[in-house]
Amino acid sequence: VSVPAIDHDALDVDLLAPETIANPYPALARLREQAPVHFSERYHSWLVSGYAECHGAHTDPRISSDRITPVLRRLEQRGAAPELLEVFCVLSRWMVFKDGADHRRVRGLVSLAFTPRAVARIAGQVQEIADAVVAAAAGEERLDLVAGIAAALPARVIAVLLGVPEGDRDRFEAWSDEISPLVFSDLGDERRHERAAVGMGELVEFLGAAVERAREQPGEDLISGLVVAQEGSDALTDAEVVGMCTLLLFAGHETTTNLIGSSLLALIAHPDQRARLEREPALIEPAIEEFLRFDGPARISVRIVGEDLELGGRRLRAGERVYLLLNAANRDPARFAAPDRLDIGRDPNPHLGFGFGPHYCLGASLARLEARTVIPRALERLGPLELDGPLSWHPSLLGRSLTALPVRRR
Ligand code: HEM
Image 1: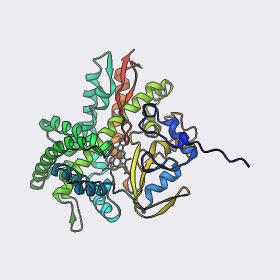
Image 2: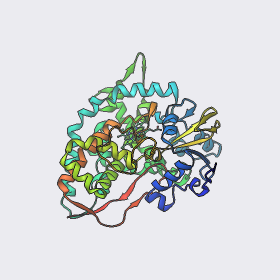
Image 3: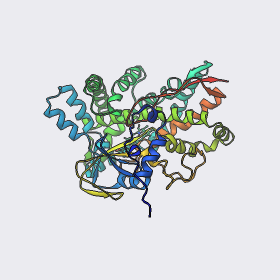
Image 4: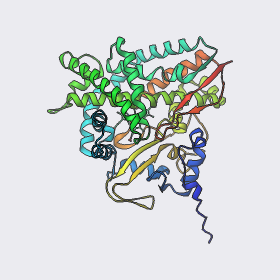
């Protein structure tokens, strides 16, 4: 019996190497084939690249989502600046970093306000924003679809959802841009932290005032909904509502920009699929699921092992870090037929692009609404498109994000 040799190069995947950032899928496939659960010395973390293992890890109560408390403790020990500690205090209230009953409590209360109805209520405004964005872009013969379309929509939509007044929206979007590198990149760079701390302080102050106004006179917006949400005698505190709003802004801004960008790129790179979508517009819904699977915005969800456990035949010990490689799982041939093929009609499509289990993306319906509103409108108004220059991607560990998508209209 011959035992296949272990390919050590395949195991030592460098997720930030320029060629891996440009196209991560060959390296992820080699890693998954060699070891769907592998301890990476480079990242001091477990890399989980198999679909079954990644899926299972999302619902395993021994795997914790709280990767903020350890960082906060380290910063406290090092005597970090108070503004920086304040950023991490805000982050530590985000439900995406909570486990078990704490998480269920906040998610339950937030779900009372952030309902499909609350999303449906702003559908008309999303359409108006999308129309205006596409109309502005349609004046150009050569344009960048990231700046012109993908980045122009999501922060504005979240501002509408939260009820941020028209006159404050530019400031609101600027804070988001200042703080997001902290949230989406490696949590180790202190200079980035300090820059973000200032923006976070201003944003928290702004949201605090909005929460006070909503307490006095609740309206139809989501901040009001969060303020009044009640389960028995339990309700969110003002600090929790503010924390939740900052989470919604970050969770729903860059990710949705990146989905719109990578969807447009996928359609430009696969003209047959674009033609199919134009022939059958109803395919937009499965198409968006396929864009999430094929090259989704969330590359990695980070976890910490809470209790020793076995995963994919490997022994994981309490305290170790785990990277759930969603994009690798989403191309696992054991789960998806012809995983490297873009098929906008793929059905079923149990991708992990919005995560899975208790932390499944709360904003999935909003992200889908934005994507299915703006993508068909952009295709229709802009007509045939071809790439106009090389692609470049942010060298981000956690997110998959085009810096620009230069195109020429034909
Ligand atoms: C295409 C766009 C989006 C993608 C790819 C995405 C992806 C994800 C993923 C993978 C998770 C799970 C994280 C984990 O398990 O650790 C998540 C959670 C979350 N997302 Fe999204 N998201 C998107 C858009 C949005 C939007 C628009 C909002 C809201 C405005 C939002 C709000 C949230 C929240 C609040 C959570 C935390 C849920 C919890 O911890 O229970 N997301 N998202």
